Structure formats: structure tokens, C-alpha cells
Length: 344
Image 1 (cartoon, rainbow, N blue to C red):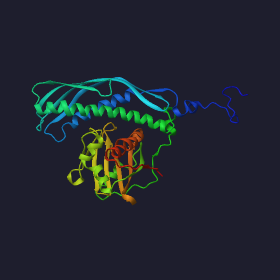
Image 2 (image 1 turned 30 degrees about the horizontal axis):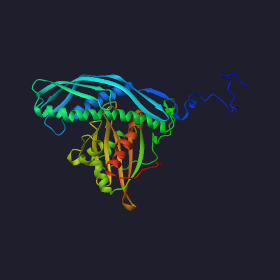
Image 3 (image 1 turned 135 degrees about the horizontal axis):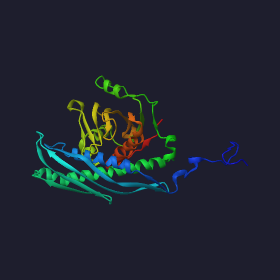
Image 4 (image 1 turned 30 degrees about the vertical axis):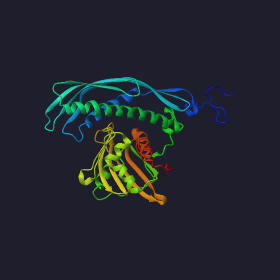
């Protein structure tokens, strides 16, 4: 028998290194995700406050420093991930009128030990009643939902790595349907969108992925669910802004976590969006989303999504977001049925 380290490849029994550690992620393991969650909470808190001004004559914002402190650990046993966390935060807020005049300020604090964070506002000066009411009702609800979304996304990312049979030591070997270059050709952009798409395509440090989904619903209805704010709000449980290009093309979803612009709008067949998440760096980096809807027999609709120019470190998180936060919730809320199709 060879000595340790002499490694004869003819031996069946050999040291597998990290590949032989906790195969299938069946045994107990832990991950400290405090730093990632801290940055996401800070970004979501800012975005939720800013979104309160949408459709009103007031602008809400958090002023620096935005303090978020605490820790979050994920643990896995028998391929199921759960979280243990303890967070608290504090920041000064202010509200301004249409002419940028000050309409009041105060402090916002939260404590998060239970499933829902406890959010409190204090007030300094004469804050208009309409602003106070919006902070106490929609403000609390928006901040709570945004923070819960952060935790849901972190758990979904961990669960996805388990489903793929990978852990952090083998992340580089994932067989996820995400590639730097897809064999599926990108849809041809219209004349008005060619420049924007070309500018965002094939940038260094980015990748792309393709998703195909089927829904038991007419194509026009599926298109409406992707573009009508009142329908989007039903399955995202947050304010949504989505307008056609001729009306400005504005796009904002999930409390400002996703922002961008609708570049091409061809109901009920095609939608092209300039798209980014609020925590991407640099702040001017945008990806491009192509969605094509095709009618199928039996009243079904097939949706093909190609998302390109996504930062490499956000590829898997973005893919999971589409599958779970958008398409999955659409099926549940509107009882659409259907399933994701294999990616070729």
C-alpha cells in the first residue's frame, strides 16, 4: 500500500478532498452570510423608503449613515436550509415636497428577531398628516416586506446550491443552466432598441441565461401580468411601476430592488427591458432582458426569457429570482399551472 501523499491513480480508494466532503449536503453544515445580508438590508431599506414617494407629491429618503448591525447564519441538515438571525438598524429620514422644500424628518429604527421586523418611526417638526399616515401604514409594510425578501432570497440561493448537489467548495463546478454564452441566439432588437442592447451586450465579467416557462393562460393575459402594475403588485406584494416606451418606459419592481426601462413593447408577443438590481456595481451597469411569448395548443403560452449582461456574481441569484419571485408567484396567485421547461 502506498504512503499517504504518494497517490497511485490505480487505487480505487483515494482521497477525494472537498469532493468527498458531505456528499449531497445531507449532514449538518453552516454558512455565515452576515456581510451579504447586511448590504442587502441596507439597500432594500433605502429602496423601500424611496418607493414611498411614487405617485405622490412627496419624496422620502434615508440619510447617511444608514446603520444596520447584526448577524445571520444559515444551517443545513438533510438538504434543508434555515436561518438564525438578529438584526437592528437605525437611520434618519426626511420628506421633501414637490419643490424640494423640507416637510419634516425623524428617525427610523427596526429590530428583527422574529419572522417580521418591528419597525418604528419618530418625528421631528411638523410632519404633514398624509406623510405620517403613509409612513405608519405603507412604510412599515414596505420595509417589512423588503427585509423578508432579502432573507427569502438568501435561503433560495442556498437551497439552489443544494438542489444542484454543490456546496461552497464546489461552486465553480455547478451544472446550472447559466452560461457565459448561450447557444440560443438573442432576439433581434428593433431599430429603437439596437443601440441600448448593443451597449449592454457581451461586456467583460458578465454572463447570460435562458429560461422557458409554460402557463395555462392566453398569451395576452400572460403579457398583461408582466406589464400591468396592478397585476404585478398582486404577485410581488409590493408597488410596481411599468409603462410603455411611448409613456416613458419606466420600470421599478420589488420596492426598487429592480429598476430599469422598457425598451421594446409589442403586446402580446415580445418585451425587451433594460434591467438592473439596486445592489449591482457599478451603479450604471444594466443588463438586457428579452421575453418572447408564443401560443401553444390547448390555450397554453410558452414564455422564453433570455437575460444577458448579468454580472457573474449575480447570475445564479438573478435566475432564481425569475423562477421563484416572478414566475412561481404568478402561477400561485393567478392559478396558471404549467411548469418550467428543460433548457436546451
